[in-house]
Figure 1: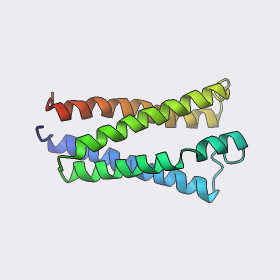
Figure 2 (figure 1 turned 90 degrees about the horizontal axis):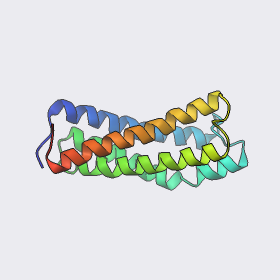
Figure 3 (figure 1 turned 45 degrees about the vertical axis):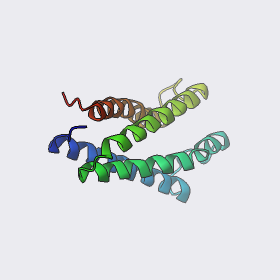
Figure 4 (figure 1 turned 90 degrees about the vertical axis):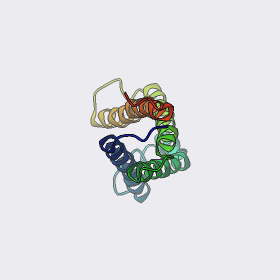
Length: 141
């Protein structure tokens, strides 16, 4: 595996660290109850709380990937690829759950917020999978 360029490595590392920090912020707000992120609706609260462990693991992987990429550790692209796959999967689970609940049937702030989160997980996860695979294969074109 070739070493990736410094600019690419720093950008990906920053994105990974930012993603891990945002996940930690989300769960901090959710668990503290300082902002209603669905806790008031029992079905949504049960769904969201079922993913605390998976989201914690994803946040940890994002932070490790960010650190490894910024430190130019060879494990960086691998951990980023694992985190990207998790992000894609969890984003698709959210999309299916909220679509089946009818959240996207009418425009609302909550629907827009969820679509932003889901889009970040699905599109970001897909993009990082592609980049991660290229880096692992040694193709930096």
